[in-house]
Image 1 (cartoon, rainbow, N blue to C red):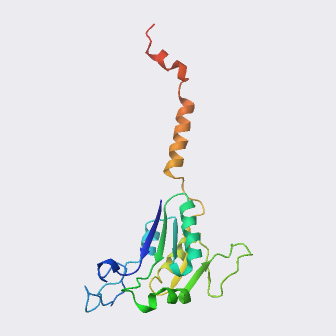
Image 2 (image 1 turned 90 degrees about the vertical axis):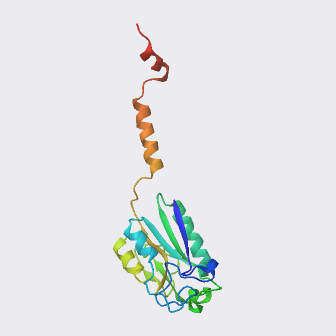
Image 3 (image 1 turned 30 degrees about the vertical axis):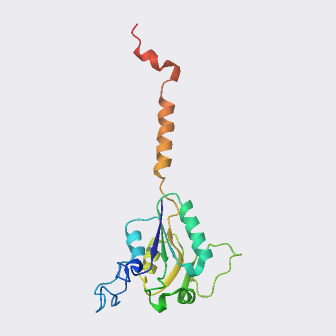
Length: 187
């Protein structure tokens, strides 16, 4: 399963109300004096719950976003992709696509093939390092990191894999099909 969270830090369809990811102090129609709470950090939340694939991108980088969605869908198991999607109506000016493009800090894996050019603003990051991923995720709302925060290098088998494996083992131990009714014949 791949969850793609469209995170625009505001409820734009309800005339600009606070959302769980709205920044502290944000003034909206439902909080004219500013939000009192720190925002929920979706990246830390899923990493802390044990998600094995966690990534983030923005529509300011459609090629990167497309690659992340494909990688998430191909990952065997649960994948979470946070998409920083600015609300063009109620969002803050510093959170719009043009600003996203300028502020992006790609998470660049040193293990990436040499033909992939490393952007100058990129952060060297090993996506198999969960603790480092959590440290980077702590900057949610301050620094716009894009790319894979964490990808389990040895993911557990999925339910489908385990069910297939069990079916095969049960079939191997099952009696020959033509002999099944012989068990019910009294001799």
